[in-house]
Length: 109
Image (cartoon, rainbow, N blue to C red):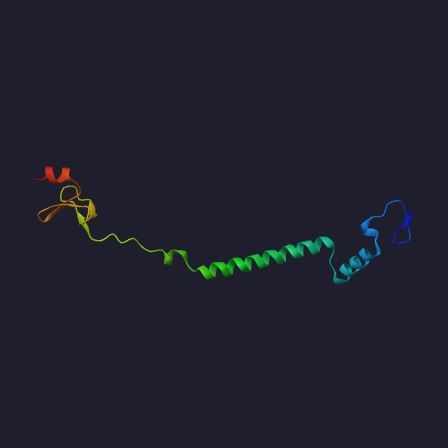
């Protein structure tokens, strides 16, 4: 038969009845928290560290919208037939007038 730390004789020896476990349990009681509270405190501590790391990464990257290059379209001209604005490079020119497509140029002649 095995004897537990509290002097009881029992058939089964559990890890919580080991003498070194009682010392750890009494140390936890000295600090004023139980094992379930210890787990919660560790979880909160790890979440806090994760939050700080996440904030530092976001600050290091900077604002995402300000760094994106804006697309340069160039000069826009208005179609003389329908009034739609198209880039000057894509417009069909007839003299000093611009059109959005050949059909509009042909119907407006």
